[in-house]
Image (cartoon, rainbow, N blue to C red; front, side, top):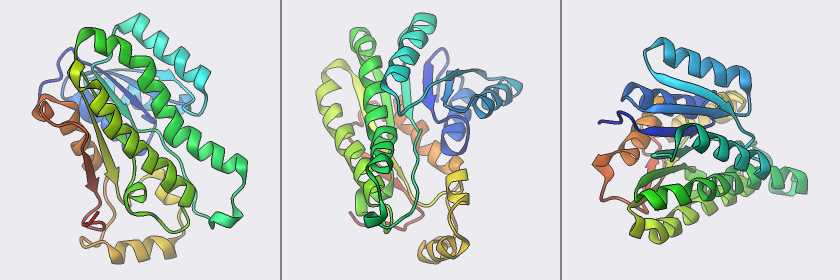
Length: 248
């Protein structure tokens, strides 16, 4: 795949799936803006990719704060021009019974997993539309496709992101913009590291491949949707779950 001279913005690039996506795009020749709320991990990602010969720089953004997102988008476009690829990989969740949730917790989940990606897409789309092309890849979750025990509001936010991606794909197709969605299943990320071993073991037993996914495997799916091999693919949802959720 040829991403030479393409500008790719990847949120949540400080670790996990976001870092793997940033690396995959940089290896393929894209100019990558690695965005994260954590300056230390974001800078580490950018430095590591430059050490591998990639063109990557870190820029801070808080994907739960609309003002931060809008300022970030304006700064990126002022420095580098319109984005060719947007990968909304930033996300967060915590397993807990729904009835134990609080409005503050729910608001954080919805802000980070749904409103944030929507806000960044809105900020970057006008320039994409004017230029007549671009690729948006939203990282949702299989929780949003089939539900997930103890992640009810998280699943709702990710389900909203899936529906948003499909609707946005319809609205922007006339401008040559592709919008697709990747839904990881249980993946070996820092977020998964916080899950109790008992729960992880149960998940692994339920997965047909009997292992967690690797961030790089999710990044491979993102790379497909972000490139010209997917030029006639839009509004699609791809599960990368090791077969855990074959239906739906």
